[in-house]
Amino acid sequence: MKSIFAIIVLTFLLASCRQQSGGEASYALGEQYDEVMPISRADQLSPPPPPPPPVKELEVVKKKIIKDGRLGIEVKDLESTKARVDTLVKIYEGYYDNERYNNTDHESSYDLKIRIPASNFDRFISEVEKGKGEIKYKEIDARDVTDQFIDLETRLQNKKNYLARYNELLAQAKTVKEILEIQEETRGLEEEIESTTGRLKYLGDLVDYSTLNLTLSKRKDFKYNPTDRDNFGERLKQALSKGWFGFVDFILFVINLWPFWVIVTLFVYGLIRLGKRKAKK
Image (tube, rainbow, N blue to C red; front, side, top):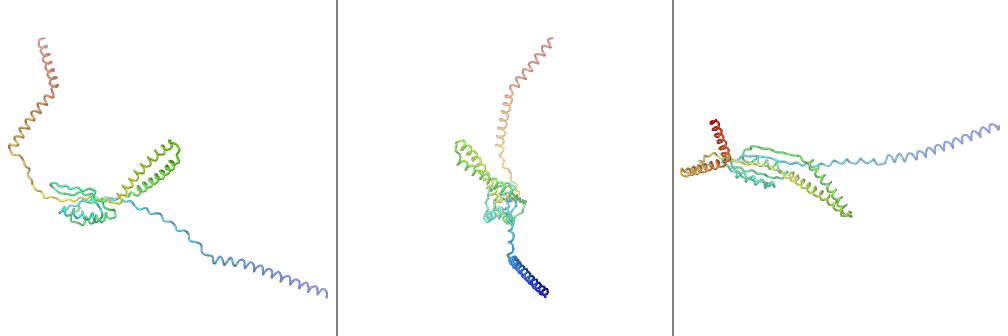
């Protein structure tokens, strides 16, 4: 009887231990689940990563182009064509850098050197070509001086930086020798800066204003124009005068050769004496 009672008690104790362990395990799993779930939700609700920063576009360098042109037009009415060109030059904001008029027996012509803003250059040439006349020649050149322009600008900036540094050293100089040496360096830099600035300005002007050498010409009809000649009496006077002056010039030329005549005379005299001596022997 006692053994049966002991078995029952032992069974009851084992069952109680299993329930406690199972509860603790369930509690532990619940805590782990509660710890894991918030992290998972936080990951799901977190904002997306920011997009990569935009790539900066390379700075586009504006091309520096020098445009020049030569254009020759033969017209029938030279003056009216010139007046039309004058009007077009004003419309397209240009100016004459040089203007020359030629008048010969065969033709009359205008040689014009015109400076036109580069933005209006092509339109100006197109308008000139629309006028009445025959185009004899046309030549347009374009030169890219961008690299040269950038190189000059870079050198200019470097020289300005050096000059600023030398000015700082000049303010800190303590002896006359140091001041004189720094002033000598700054003087050379200032001259180089002035020269480079002038070169940049010159290039900029060539880029901003294009040049067109325009020739307007008009042929003339051939006309025989007899040359005026003097009458017989006047021509006779001129002939006598030229003859006399020619004779005088010849006499003076002979006189200028007097040393030669002296040498020839002595040489002939020597030959004569030598011949007489031989004859006596």
